[in-house]
Length: 140
Image 1 (cartoon, rainbow, N blue to C red):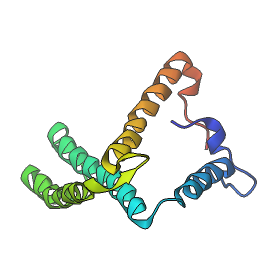
Image 2: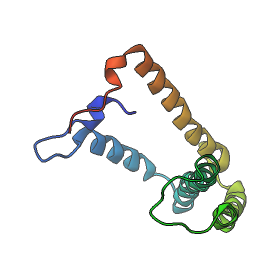
Image 3: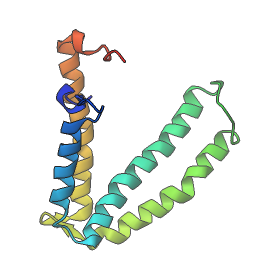
Image 4: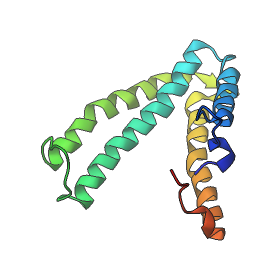
């Protein structure tokens, strides 16, 4: 879903542009305190982990007979597996409510960052619809 120039590889198969963009992002984060970095990590990683638990439950509901490499119980077990970690993540988010970033509460800042993901996805999907030749994955 990212621009193609980020995926271009050099002779040693390294995506140089993506590495540089990621490095610039991390360099910009050097100005944050350790507590702020932990807050950002907690909010973004914790949010993605909660989404994984939700996806697990949704997949169990939509595709109950889907072949899986192993089973860890039924629907109730799938729900219960995510309750404790999600509760801990939500408590940690609540505990970080006093932290501030960019002149706003850290939670608001992180939610704005996280909201950028669906926005970028929507933009990429609309661009793909306008240019169908971009939909096909590159040849391996």
